[in-house]
Length: 232
Image 1: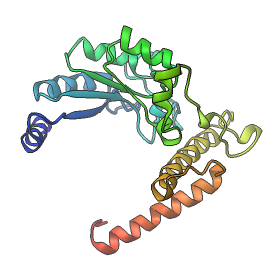
Image 2: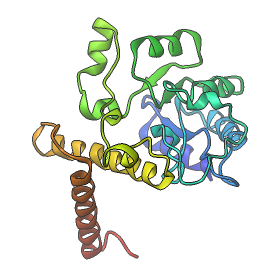
Image 3: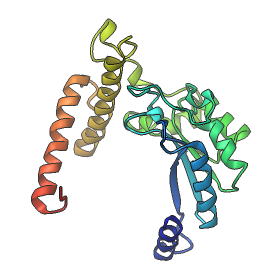
């Protein structure tokens, strides 16, 4: 099925169109998609002649791509703990993929400093560095890194639901997770603010962001259901 989808897509877009696929290294849930599963899928994708393979990882239940643990301890499924490094969470796994396939690899997750990005390209199996959160709030960041070096900001390091034990380092796992998902809402709202008027809302608090994002998603669901685009 997967190879058939890729072949049909290739036929639709033509040989000159770059065809990339994003692949989880693992979903970090017991009994879920494992590192070995990911390697097998990489084999299939290479056989289907895609052009670029992007490596990330995690799910909303285990959001490792955002440097967060879920409510349950993550199942590393054979991955080394270095996949949870501060920068380039999935570089180690990219090396394992490169031992199996010869596809150019894009790795997304955790990159902030010019040095870490350069090291990933020069010494690891990375052809393209993917940036996600930094581009939500610092659109000129990549150009500045190329010109000046240094590091990109981490707004999420300063965002929190409340002080002390209500913050992202809370010993209470539920509170820690709530902080993580509140930060996600904050980033979603920044994307919506830029789409509306081109400007970030830097004064936005995380609790306000959660409320606004919930309202926005509920409104989308209502519109989708009323138009027949979503059937539940």
